[in-house]
Amino acid sequence: MTIAALESLSFGLARMAAAADRAGHRLTLLTRDRSVYRHELDTLPDDAPLSVVDVDTFDPAATRRALAALPGLAGLLNTTDTWSVPAAALAAEFGLPGPDPEAVRLLRDKARVRELLHRHGLSKSPAVPVAPDPDSAGEVLRTLAPPLVLKDSAGTSSRNVWVVRDEEELRSALRESAQQALTGGLFAESFLAGPLYSAETLSWAGETRLLGVLSRQTSRDIAVREEAAAFPVALPPAERGEIEAWVGRVLRTAGHDGGFAHVEFILTGQGPELVEINRRIGGALVGEALCRSLGTNVYEAMIEAALGRRPRLMDEPLGHSGAACGFVLVYPDRPGTLVGWQGLDELGTYPGDVGWYPVRAPGDEIHTVADQRGCTGMVLAEAATAELALHRAASAAARVRPVLAPARVADGGT
Image (tube, rainbow, N blue to C red; front, side, top):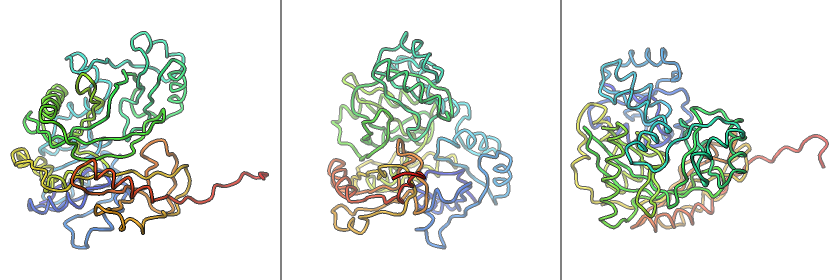
């Protein structure tokens, strides 16, 4: 029997394959670009319970044919935002367990989610649609007062997100947004003051369990870029209970009743306020951190849900028996052609079982360093607490330097 993955996050494929194997199934990855999974595929043994099918996953007909050709297809899963709607639609078409495609479409639209939660009193800010044009600034300012956030309603990886403090910055961001290839519609919402976190959750039949809270650090630039994260954040019991109750209400209202969710929020002085909902396990090394901290392969819950079974993780004790984890994203200081990295040979001298997880390979072109597309790899470290793990990861990552090919000098330059 086969469980298919319609694309996946860059990391976690090995754990996912092991989980499928334990359930008595073989995992088959459908992908249009194997290089996305370079690290995972390179580290898997030759006899790993994983097959890879090369197919244009942006082509619905080709994807449908590839799925139909799989022997004993028992489940279809997806851990990405980009393919979440096609995966839900295909699961329904093939009669496989899966989420309601309409609920997935809603969650892929950040503006619709914001408006829905605002109407139900779960978001203080409305979503204000805006044209990517500086002249539309007045429309936003009639409803929202700066500071505010401008974003793509279907954006991923922090692309096309601007934090603006006044009308001048708003007009500048709108001018820049007009030059971007937006995947959804542009909208504005209120800026939330406070530290950024994400609730890592698992749901089944409308019941939600908080697996833990992840801390998140972003850049200070006008464009938001992920820099580091750590799990699990140590919270007072009452505050953790408040977050678990809040995230359960948010997910029920948004129509997410099963599977993992990665819910980003700001912990304001008045309590948690939503940033966005991703109906998947967290990206980057969040899945790895969950597995290590909880002392279990959490991807087994993903496989069980894909087979239509209540995940055992919904009911098992959560003792955080493993190590806390922190990881830091490593960026070059400019776009260019990646040659390699300096400092990788020093990572073993740092405490915390430090690991290197490359995202890019020598020869890759780095087109931007403004968002996660510029990340070349991540440094992960363990410790007894998330705070100490992040300190260890940051100290080790400071030694890693991406090396880029020399910038070309324009003809006639000196």
